[in-house]
Image (cartoon, rainbow, N blue to C red):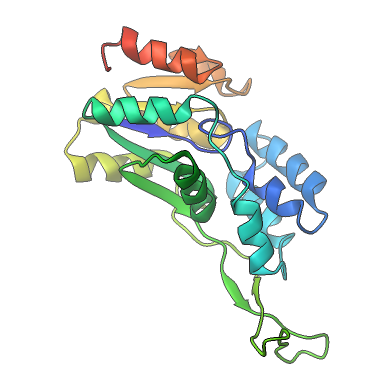
Length: 227
């Protein structure tokens, strides 16, 4: 069976864009935009672009420092491990960023079968005069461009789930999707079992069942005889 997880707000309570915003003083603006998107008040793609634009010229070293702060929720690693040991294909589908997901999984010492996520492009930094600047080592510092690339900007999670099932040969009607926000709705609405993890009000009606902790999720999978 294929089990698809959202990341920010589901497997992790670390909001990546806010952690990145802490590095340049835009965290409050990030959180406000994120909340509006998760409540389906603005389009997710537009919200993501707005948040990434606030990160323009952030040194990539600081971005990496933010990604290193991303952590899995307590119990999330155990859920992932148990699913994979039971033979299920575990995929993370997130509008968040690949580097943050990878850092959190590495920190927890757990792996998944696939990650579908977005990326923050970097480029050489520029001086105020418009020429490439250099640090004390003579190297040009790398900075975020303020743009975002990846399959889950305009692309939706039902499409990503469709690709994953095609690769694995799974029947989509037997898949499980776990998420919390409005951008998770497409995969929750097409999965065989839609699990809301403390879902937003606009999301809860589309969930077959809701949970509020990873222990509850583990118990649910046991009840469904998946573990």
